[in-house]
Length: 261
Image 1 (cartoon, one colour):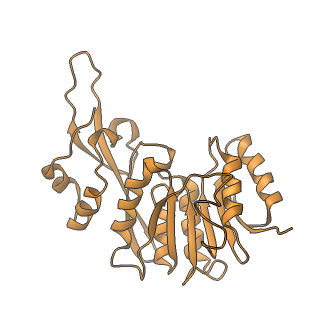
Image 2 (spheres, rainbow, N blue to C red):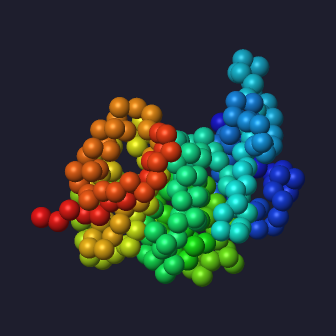
Image 3 (tube, helix red, strand yellow):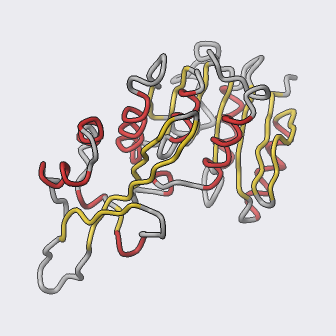
């Protein structure tokens, strides 16, 4: 079932005209909002936009939209989440990477850099990279692209020297046709919490290698949870010259540069 969001509910929920305009571009139906009673947490701003009236035999479900406000690079960043997929909610490694990028500019200098983010999700990392002066391309699967685009637009318009690009990218062994080597050149590839319960980790590694040209650095942030995280880490170290930039318990941020034969 899908229910349209009314103009009145948008005006009630969103705090500014810019927020409403950015969200309107997503064309998100109410059926894709977060289920407020299941996902509300202390400190999180959650609004119940509409009580769905289903048939008598159907369970009652309340749909809502989760809004979080983060502060990086001197700016308040408003992020909306949905439950389309793992990529549509905030993950801890994204927060760790944003903090690292903001506070370690001498290690990862994004000013004027060409940046590609893999699995951009809600867009927070791409937004912070843009605020730090990078030209960013944020990529993910089609299912999260609408929310990603709205978050990016809402938080970078009028703040950054260049609006980030938002594009579909499916990890693959064969990207030569859609993304020929040498056409897309990046200084940094960013990725945060892209390994958790993912079925295409070999394709992810191949995608990282495909876009990693001479002079490119892969900055990968990850919170270790499962054995697959450790396996991917070992494969990452085999594929790239690797250094550990940050470690705090299970949270790690790696830097990799390609091994060339």
